[in-house]
Length: 167
Image (cartoon, rainbow, N blue to C red; front, side):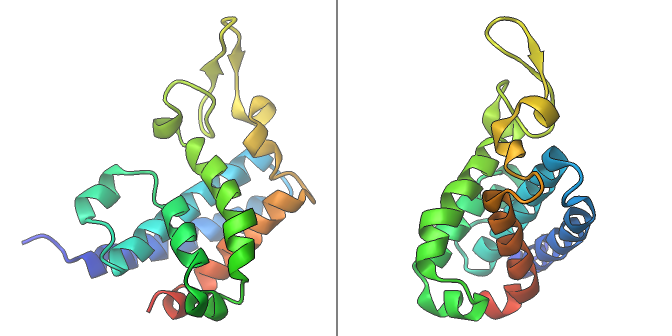
């Protein structure tokens, strides 16, 4: 008999917290690595939240890389959850959700053979590019960039308050 969704949700949440510890270590040092780690944190938190809420199956969670945006969208319309997180729904909907979606689209499996967070890619002129230098979404995670700091603060708060937010 397979493990229940609650165990999977707990495992995704705990691994997200471990990934967030790594993100704290590289913040301000390597923007593309921070972007990659935050994408991983938010993806795992999204899977954990959606599994807890019975909005995602275990099989879908294991195969998909598109849970973070959905989680943020659901949070943005849940005033009680936003209060527990201490974030305004309007900030989640208007500022955080588009940034999380950008990160999510830069996942290698979603980006296909195009620009992504983890690997070099070839552009239309056959030039090989890589995330640390050429990926615009990664650049926003440089020191003091307001968008990157917003996503970092959101991911950090969600790691800390996850159990209160997704009861």
